[in-house]
Length: 157
Image (cartoon, rainbow, N blue to C red):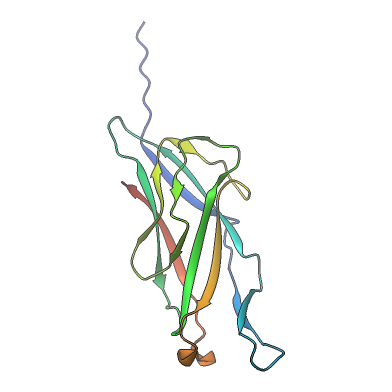
């Protein structure tokens, strides 16, 4: 008897919880001279889940992030911190780059993803943290609030 096993190459990603929106809002200070800070008006954490299988002799995968619509208001920087894998999946999970300043071009946020699955949902995969940093107080303008769309892509290394 001959048995043939075929496993297709798979590259799937999702963000959990689905259809989440992060609201980062500048908080009014109560004292003159205090620094302005940002607070989250929603759950600030999302979870990046992925499933990956590699063909023989295929390179590992990288995960990229980029802003595809909208722009970060002047004087601000949108930072994304990617935490180490946690959960009950199996395989060769990727290595996070830690914190990147999101831009309109793709940037690697996780590298060296091998054959693995993170499992689904919150508390599985890599926790994503979004934060706004003020880079230039002179350029801040409350009229320049904006909505951004961020896309995540799994690519060959």
